[in-house]
Structures are given as C-alpha cells and as structure tokens.
Image (cartoon, rainbow, N blue to C red; front, side, top):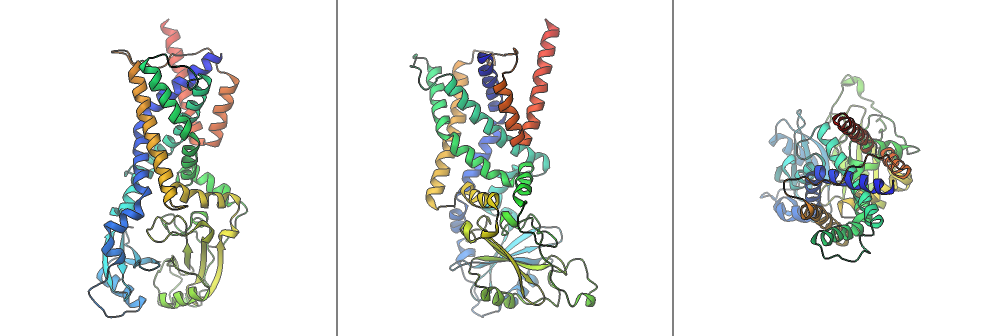
Length: 443
C-alpha cells in the first residue's frame, strides 16, 4: 500500500505536470513581466508620466477635465489619480461601450498626452497573467485551475522527495538519478515561497477569489448603497466590493432621480472635493472615483495594490473615504485599522505577490523564486526524457490496488481548501475509474 501511495502520487504528479506546464510557464513569465511594470512604465511612458504640455497657461482642474472631455468626444472622466511629484495627474476616461483611455495633465492641468488603457504595459501583462489575454469565465477558471494544481505538484513533489529519500541517497552514476535529484532539490527549496506566492495571488481568481472575499467580509465594516464595480483598480481589494453610503441628494427632483449621471449639474467640483480631501489630511497619492449614480458618492482611496504606477502606498496606509457628491461633506471611511484579520493578511499578501511590499528585495526574491520554478519545470521534463524509452510515453507505473487513508485525507483537505481543485479531482478520479473498468473488460 505504501508503494501504491507513492506510485499514485508519482503518476498524478507526472500527468499534472505534462498538462499544465504550458500554462504555468505562461503565468510565471507574465508574472515576472508584471513584477517590474513600474520600472518599465517609468521608462516607456516617461513623456506622459513626467513631461509638460506645450502650453504654459494655468488651468483649474475642472477646466482641464472640461478640455479633455471636449477633445475626447464620447468619453467621460470617471477616475482621477492624484499623484505625488514628479508624476503627472492621470485621468481615466470611459465611453458607453466600456472602452477606457488614460489622459495625463501636467502642473498647469494642460493635456500632455493619452493612452489606450488596454494597450499599456501593465494592463497587457495583467491580462496575460489573469486571463491569458483571452478573457472569459472558462479561461479564468483554467488559469485558477493551473494555480491550484501547481500547489498539488509542489506538495506531491515534496512527499516523493522525502519518502523516496532522493536527497540522501548516494548517486548511482545514472544521468536520470542526477536529473531527478536536482529537480527534487530545487523543488524542495522553493516549495514554501512558491505556495505563498500562489496563495497571495488567489484573491484575484474567479472561484477562490469570491470565497476569500466573502470570508474576509464577515464582521467587516458595512457601508450602505451600490458596491463599486470590480474594474476600479484604485479601490483597495479589501473594500472593493463593499457597499458604499449614499449621498443626501437635495436636488433629485430637479432631474428625476435618473439612473446614472457622473457629471450632473449639482455635483461639487473636483477642485472643491480636493479642498475637502486636504481638510481631512488625506495626502497624495490617492484616487478619486466619480459617483456612479445620482445618489452615489465620491470615493477617495489610497490602495496598496492599485496596479497604477506611482499610486501604490503601504498596506497600513490604505483607506477608502466617502464624500457627499453635492455638499462635499465627509461621510465615512474604512481604514486599514478597520479591516479584520483576513483582510489585513491579504492587504499585505497581494503587494507581496506583486513584488512591491518591501521594495527591490521583494522583487528580487519573487524573481529568483519564479526563475527557480521555471527551472524545476524544465528539469522535470528533462528528467522524464532521460528515462523515456524510445517510441514509448514512459509514464509512471499504474497502481490500482486501492487508496491509503493518508492519500484520501490529503486530497479531501486540498479539495475543501481549494474547491476548483476538488472539482477537477473528482473528474480525474472518474477518469481513473473508467480506465480501470476498460482495462478489466479487455482482460
């Protein structure tokens, strides 16, 4: 039975590696690309981020926004990212079809230039990493499934390394054993940091992300109204789906309480809002999200995982503040201190995953772990090829003599902890049963 336990681990480890290796390589390479997006974008978009327009005329922020919306007909400003110097202010514009553009204003609030949001380096890397640049629910599930099975690969590899005493056995001179030993050694070294990286990335996933957020939201601060939409990157992850309080709309009867009006005539100006923000001692950088309805509010937030170059802050500085869109009155705020334990954990975990929690050492650590992971994948294939017989697949031996209690307990625990993995595990088990049935009928 013990040998059967080992062989089953080996077989599932082998086939999982064969099928998901292309996905894991894609996710790892795109993750490395995203790791350095601030440094890359500071160079690629130097003129937009730090440059000046040709005009020296000083405009107010409202005049700048009005000019932008006039020049970009069909688009409306929905977010404003107020950066620390030397970064320019970034406006996010959205049209009725949901397409977005970024427009940058200099110190005079004059237009410096614009970008198509979907084509920026950070958004391209993020799109590849989260949805393989294809998008859609099935693809998102596939990406999450690859991450889940990567955890199984690491755990099963760890078990086989120590159970098979690969690291302590004397070299027998064979090339296959040397390859296996190196594959196992690097795998053992990176198991813990790689599992941490994978788990801290799961809050953005489809199934586990919703489960984590729902669990984290228990006993969290509850604010009433419409939740902010999921594509508002500047709102911190911990409060991104929280309901927001409503503005007291004394003018609703003037415009019939219409469903959505980002720029109705009764709203306070952005300049007035910025004065209110400063009076609340909210320092740069921060983002301003326009109200999404007549009874909506201005959302002013500081996030540690905004995905915007120059906008991230330390997790302990995170805050989401709400201001009445008509009076500018401060309504409420959710600060880092208000988060529950799980929210705080992922507020620190996400920037750790993205590589900017503790500066360059974080980036270097993540880079080394990712490169080592790629090496483990490559060396795993090399190990297989070194023992593969010509014209044969040379998969690990089948073992259908039953399952040990330890194996069942481990699979059930992983299936409960990672539901998508559990579902796929049931499918794999059914396939194994079909293989057994077919084999018995042929005998």
